[in-house]
Image 1 (cartoon, helix red, strand yellow):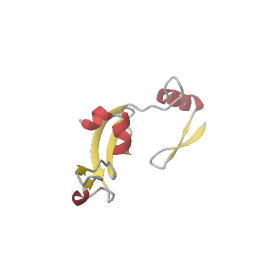
Image 2 (spheres, rainbow, N blue to C red):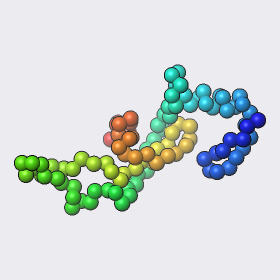
Image 3 (cartoon, one colour):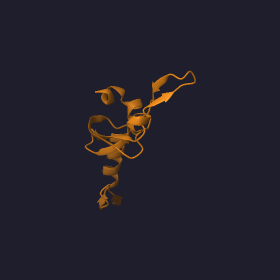
Image 4 (cartoon, rainbow, N blue to C red):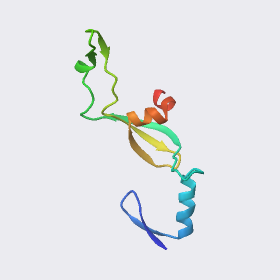
Length: 102
């Protein structure tokens, strides 16, 4: 039996075979953890978001272009295993572009 710390701060005892089954369930054939996205359920922004007054930047020719930035935006992702996690938009748009666009 092993004591396992859970995300909510509690500790529970689990047998080695239960732990091994859960680890194997969450890894791909190459041994990498891979969580399948079930849904993006919410979004939020923090104080780092570029304000509307600064959304344009001038290039060397003086033309104004929209500033490309995802700074300060986070998405609440629900994974197929039932867990939820806040992920930066910049990371989610790279690995799940269709779901982020929707």
